[in-house]
Length: 536
Image 1 (cartoon, rainbow, N blue to C red):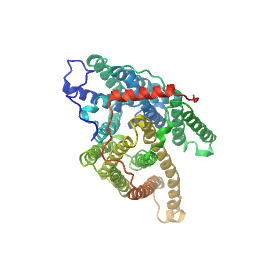
Image 2 (image 1 turned 120 degrees about the horizontal axis):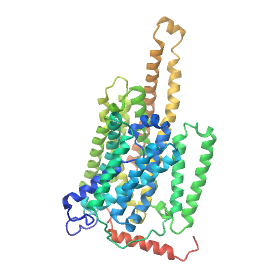
Image 3 (image 1 turned 90 degrees about the horizontal axis):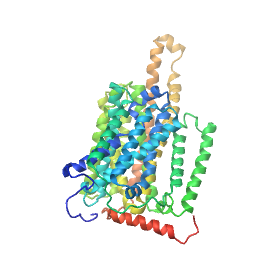
Image 4 (image 1 turned 60 degrees about the vertical axis):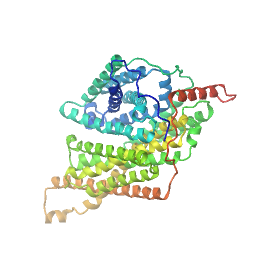
């Protein structure tokens, strides 16, 4: 399976001679984790940030989506940067970028500037992570087998998300929410120290200039992603299309999309090539990941409302569930590795297994949510959520690599992550927020009609205390109703998957080495630069 095993032991020639060979890949794995722990803002301290910076919840969430958008947009540029700069230059600049962004972010109150800082931090974050993981890929799998690489990669990525939330909450509880930014600054100083003392500049191929990159196209796609995110993130606050802001933004989205398509179809080397959209099974894969992310957005809306408004949990209580999410993530990644690499079973059936875990999470919360429960009763559904997210993320990534050539893989990965990390989540959050806005008043009206002068006079009670408890119960009922509808939708999609099978090969195609990849990029640029065409 995959490429032949390379001769000789795994080496990392960018390290200086005094660094023991056995710990070299572990150093880069540590650096990758430090980058993944970073962010422009940290949702573990969401409530404290809202009070400390005098911002709305939507403002902080927009910062998070800007950070994720920076990561998604940057994917097509990763290899071009790798072929232009040395490993030390890329990691040093990425660490400096993350460090500076975390230093200035807590003091910025002007929202567009804060969003830009978070966007840049996301670009630096993915640059550092990619540079580390691409250099230890052969250490993880000498045959470049992606059924090995992607499950282990997602342990780093998804596990770091939960660890970042845990560290943020503990630092916020004992100190202040800004200490997480200082913690990341400290980690980046360690990374810079390692780069300056243990790593040397190394170029394993001739320098390839940054010619032929469609920077304007990248800016247009980034603008489109930001506009869509703003629409769904602030839509409920602006009362959707009753507001002139949302109507004008909708027109702007259409215009930006037209410009993106026009530029993609009329220049020789667009940021996203038209052929990238034509691969078989690509559109179903994009649709699936968007729906899955919308399902999993219940974590950021329904769960948080339940913890804060119904159960009145403090952050230190609800954050305990992150440990069980980590257990589910590790279990899901290991299961994916066993299924795809050891047993070489069908990928579509693994996606179905992931949906079983997702259904278990949704039904588990639907049946469990109550003011009478202990938090330990939520452990199993949380493990199911982590398991499902890990299985589906790793499997979708392997499927994407299988259906696309290497030339278009990172472009396809960019669009995939636009939906995976940004659009799917913000769309789901908008739907659930709108659902709560409908069901809570509806339930208050239905059940509140039982409280009248006659019933109150026959059985007097403390009205203010009763109404507080009554509203909490209506919130609980509303959350359970939405969980029920999401579970129905997930089961319906699960049944469709049982009836539909897209035949992705079980054996991975061969992954070219770096020199062949660089040669292919150079030849592609040469052909597009000297093609006898009138398109410009």
